[in-house]
Image (cartoon, rainbow, N blue to C red; front, side):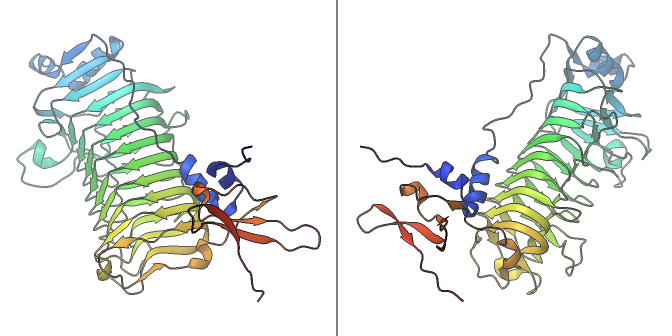
Amino acid sequence: MKKAGIDRRTFLKGMGLGGLAYLIGSHFRAPAQVTAATAQTARSLNIVDYLNSNRSIQNAIDDVQAAGGGELYFPPGLYYTDDTLVIKGDNVILKGANKTSSIIAARSFDISKNLLEIRKSSGRIANVKIQDLTLTSDARKASARNNDTSFYNHGIVLDASHNVEFQNIRVDHFNGDGLRFEDRNAEGGPDQVIITNSTFVACMNGLNTNDTGHSTHIYGGTFEFNAKHGINTGGRNSVFIKDADLEQNHMAGLRISHSSNIVVRDCTFENNARKVSLSDKKHAHIVVGDTAVAQNIVIDSCYFHARKMRYLISVERGNHISIANNFVDYADQFGTTAGAFVQVGQGCRNIFCDDFSYRQKPKVKRLSNHQYAVSDLKPSAIPSLPVPNESLRGFITRVEGGSGKRDAFYVCIKTENGGYKWARINLTDL
């Protein structure tokens, strides 16, 4: 007769100590692939035809929208605009040959303008795609290339929308943000935004989600040399960042001010916080919870360049945060011996921090405040022990004592003969 058992997931649901691991394994599982279902129609226009007829880029966009959607193609070349370009219709694609040769540039100086706005006056805009283009307000691209002046405010403003994709684009040299989310018509901000293999450089923030919308997916790409952060996210629900390079930003490469459900995986962080004092807690590659509690965050399998840094990750206010499987290079060259791999503030709970791997022996602590990191990680009570098995190996649980009996703690271990059993933990009263 087969013994009744319990699988690893069911077991972890009942365990406080394993609860964070369960949270990581289920709530933070990223989709295998996410794509924007931008409508492809028979309508395809070439911008050259419009410019040769003394018509503007906006005229071409308007014609695509009037047809119900389609593609506007930009062959290799430099295309000027003297005003903000606006996409306000669904199913619109702006596509270049590639982001190094097809360039849309601001020509007139007006820092009150944005280069491209994707928004409707009311309601949500749907199924828009920007692909293989550079958007810039760098005066060097718009004139004699003899200075480094930004002409416009934000590069792209994305308002209330659904299913918008930015693929293989470059946005550079804006006084404001490279890509900025907004919600002016109270529709909830952008929803289901995919950013793939794109570059955001020399802006205020490379990407600023601006406390609005939800479900943003970032795959690959570079966020560098921005005056504040590579990515600034706050108030967002469900952000997934994978294989991105966040480097050379003047403040933290990634700021998670007060967000929920954020996964950062396989990313590279190098030479950030260039304009932040070494004595500042924000002298870090990643800053979490600096304005309010940020919760349900995973930072996993990332590369951190530690030289000249005070912290790799600074968590000021956080709850349910997992930091695991990360690698540190130049671990022996931190900028200050008062630093740590992870700075944990007093407003933190349920911080799980696995040890970092590194080549050089670090001269700083791995974790600044262990007491706050493990304050709420405790095994929950279960009525009886499940059948031990390989998937439960190493987990600890508590069997609650009945009336007049003390609690008992057990750990699942592997035995000499290759089987598994529960071993009771002997406790010594203080």
